[in-house]
Image 1 (cartoon, rainbow, N blue to C red):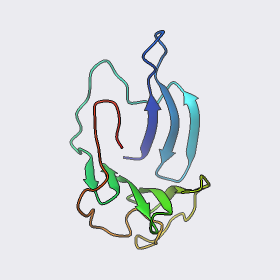
Image 2: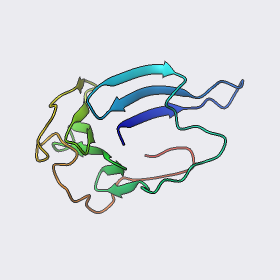
Image 3: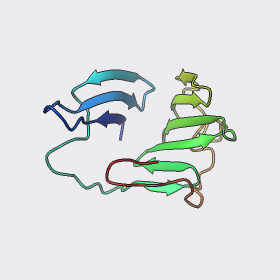
Image 4: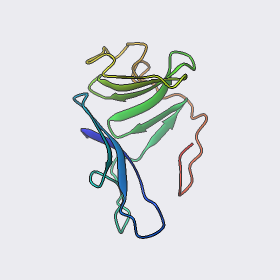
Length: 129
C-alpha cells in the first residue's frame, strides 16, 4: 500500500533482479539499482487488488500512473494525494511536486476519480505499454 517499485530482471548470467526506483507514499524516493523491494519471485503472487486500466491511466492498489495536464505530464500519485513524481514530456521530472496535493490538483492522477474507458493499454507477459 505504501510502496510502489519499478524493477527488472536480466534473463542472462543468473543476475539477481534489480529495483530501479521505489516510490513511497510519504513522498520519499529511493533510487537504485538495488536488490530489494522487487517483484520477482520464483512463483507469481496474486493480489486481491488487480491492476485497473482507464483513459491513459493504470491503477495498482492505492497508486495511479496517469497522463495529466493534456499530454504534457505523467503523474505517479498515491491515494493519499501525494504526487511522488511528475514527469514532463521533455524529460524533466519533479520529485515531491505538490506534497500533499488536493485530490483535484491538475497534476494529480486522482484529479478525475473516474478512470475512464481504457485507452493506450497493451499488456503482455513481458511489458505494459
